[in-house]
Amino acid sequence: MFKTALTTFVALLFVSFISAQEKWDLLKCVQYALDNNISIKQQDIQAQIASLTYKQSNLSKYPNLNLNSGLDLSTGRSIDRTTNQFTTESIFNNRFSLQSNVDVFNWFSKRNTIAGNKLEALAATAAVDKLKNDIALNIAATYLQALLAKEQVNASRILVGQTVAQLETTRKLVAAGSLPELNQLQLEAQLATDSVTLITAMGTETQSLLLIKALLNLDAGVAFDIVTPPIDKVPIDPIAELQPEVVYQLAIANMPQQRLNNFRLQAAEKFADAAKGALYPSIGAGIGLGTNYSNLKSNSKLLSTTPIGTTEIAFVQGSNTPVYVNNYARTFYANPYFTQISDNFNNGIGINISVPIFNGNSARINWQKQKLTVKSLTLQQDLDNMTLKQNIYTAYTDAMTALQKFNANTKAVEAAQKAYDFSQKRYDAELLNTIDLIISQNNLFTARINQLSAQYDYVFKMKVLEFYKGQGIKL
Image (cartoon, rainbow, N blue to C red; front, side, top):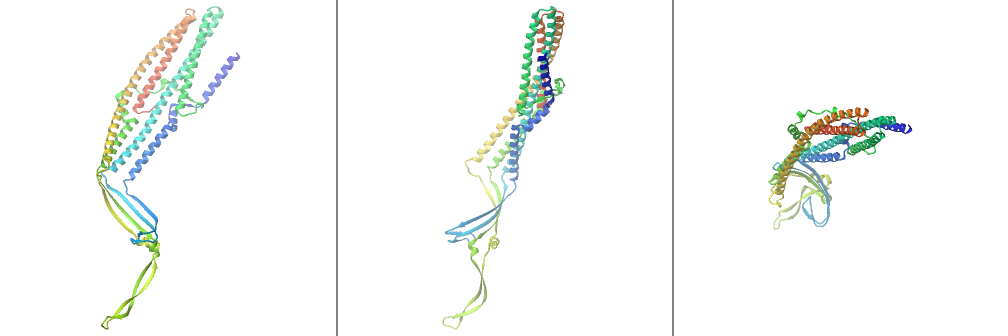
């Protein structure tokens, strides 16, 4: 009695613990994975990098503008930038320049590059969506496996309960002398077998929950359980709306893998056009402003002369004609920094034409490589579309097969239940031996497990078809 009471207390405590902890439904599992999965975060970073690459290339279509400044000290024989004359004095120069350049025409090479980078950014976003879809589908499959494991535990418990009830009844009959002790021993052996089946099912349930936690990146030691909605209450689209050809056409338009392939192919075509543009001449224009300062000019004195009259200095030889020289008032002043900056201001504008003649044939080879990339991505797109169609038709066939198996197993359960009920009545009336009763009971258990497996398999295959249709995963 003490052992029975202790076992009951521990079982009740375990059930209370399980009931108290929060249970996760499929939506919460999927959302948690999408928010915390490291692979998704890494793929999202790549999408952000692709977006920045597009942003940078888009801004390249505008003229650039650069301000440059330099300081240099020259010794020995050199040219003074302010006078363009040779000097042997040490020269300290300070120069400023403002330059702007713009591509006037390059056979739309830059425009196609920008368009290609934009499509690559869209492809990177589609790659994130594809990864999210793959993870959601993987979690849904694991979630359904865990639900099946829980159902198998419940079925095993029912089986144990039935065997325990039969054993208790048989013990009373054996004690009363109505049945031989062999019947009791056979049922005790069957109870041990059923208990092993229950323990195995509970282990499978625990493993399935651990697998879900691994997919969610949850600590294995964290308490975790899932919501168990009745499988027959899970909404499923009518099979008429999930015909494989209809689902395939929707999948081509909606599945991230197909959008990813389409964006990458279009981007490759744009990059090929951009590479072709590099084979032809390009035209550019530029404008520049500049000024400079030199210490030599700053240290020198500027001379300003003003006429103030004449002075007689001699006579023309052989005559009385005097010779005069002009007199000037001379003024000396320094040439400061900002004065030089203002006086030395210069500007210019120009147009340049670049004609590719021979550069190791790199431009043409690059164009040829880009064209091969287009062909490769076209083949990859065709291959992925074929694989998608094959998967959809396979999922549809598997769903129909699972439905037929479920219907057949349902009939098998009904027949096994009738056979068991009849066997139980005969056993109670002492018209059936224990071995035949156990066989009937095991047949019923096997039929129920097969029915559950077929039902969950059918639901999952239908959910896969809904997933390809673009409805996501829901239970």
